[in-house]
Length: 166
Image 1: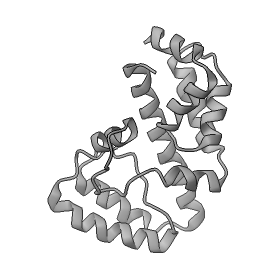
Image 2: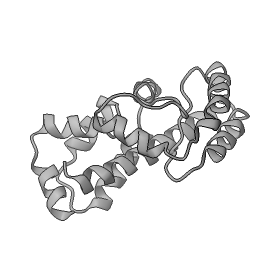
Image 3: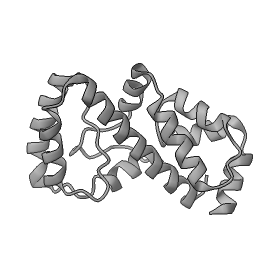
Image 4: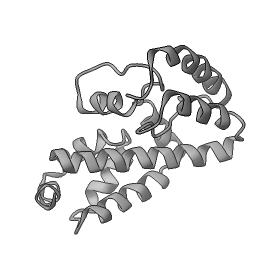
C-alpha cells in the first residue's frame, strides 16, 4: 500500500482530483485533499479526508449527496463509484427494497435530500431501522449525521482506492 500511496502523492493534481471525486463528489473536498499531498501514511490521508468532508459547506455536502444513489436502489453504470455503491449496498435483499423506497421518500420530503448512510456491512433491515430513527432528527442534528456518514464513506472509498491503486 505504501507504493500506491507514493503513486497517489506523485500523480498530477488533475488526476488525483479525479480519483478523489470517486470517493466524495465534492470538488472542494477533492481539491483540499489533493492539495495537502504528500501524505506520509494512509492514516494521515484518511484523517485529512474526514476533516475535509466535515468542513464542507452545506451546498458542497448536497453536491456530494447528488452522486449517491438512494439506499435500496441498484446503482447503474460501470464506473468505480457505481461499482463501490453496489458493493456497499450488497446487504439489501430485493424484498426490502420496497420498504426502503417508501422510507426514502419520507426522508426526502422531511429533509429535502437523499438519505445517506455508510451501508457497508449493514443488512437491509438495519439500513431501514437507521433511516426510520433519523426521521426523528431535527435539521441541525441530521446535517451532523449526514456529514459523519459522508466522511465514513469517503474514508472507506479512499482506503479502497489506495488498495486498488490510484
